[in-house]
Image (tube, rainbow, N blue to C red):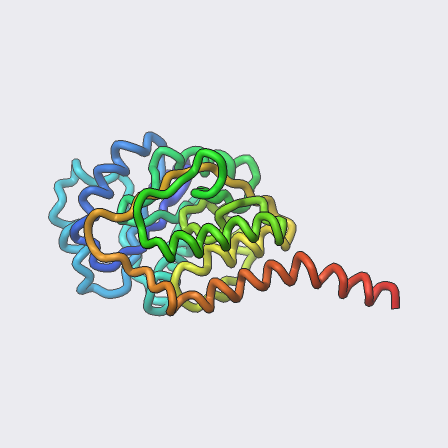
Length: 249
């Protein structure tokens, strides 16, 4: 990787042999900037790895690295392993299943380069949307995102979406406390806002995967999401009142 590489894309994988080829093709077609792609995996037997190795060199993105996750099993730690391995000023998290739009990546990166610590690809703002996916998951996600926008004052309608760009200097200054799933996305977003960093959003259309099996575990991971949902509400409504009460006492 050369010193002018603009950003890194962190891609957590788990047996994505059916989608990794299409992902590489879409990345080559959709990214016209100098970036690195980090394929983050948990174990050497992951079927993504031989499928990727079998691809001809001219069908892979130019700068692609494998990152073995040694922080802990699961997507939550695979994403952080990629963030730690990134060597660029901006880190974008994307999925391998082609649910995220490559066409908005450069806008996410540009906003982060202009100073936003977190830039959210938003399904629930004007111009955004979803195609397919489980009804319950979509409904809960929309309710969480929109209610955090209105009730907690978060500058995004879609805090739960994992498709985001982060400034690396922000990531180095914040502790990730989430323990499972994709909840680190909402954690990093609400922490950025309430710790005084800039958060922005860009509309995106999310597409449900057409190949492979989703690893999303709604009910297993829901407590992690709720932790940061209520943390944001507490920061917005209760911390200022406690501070005022203590200041007046």
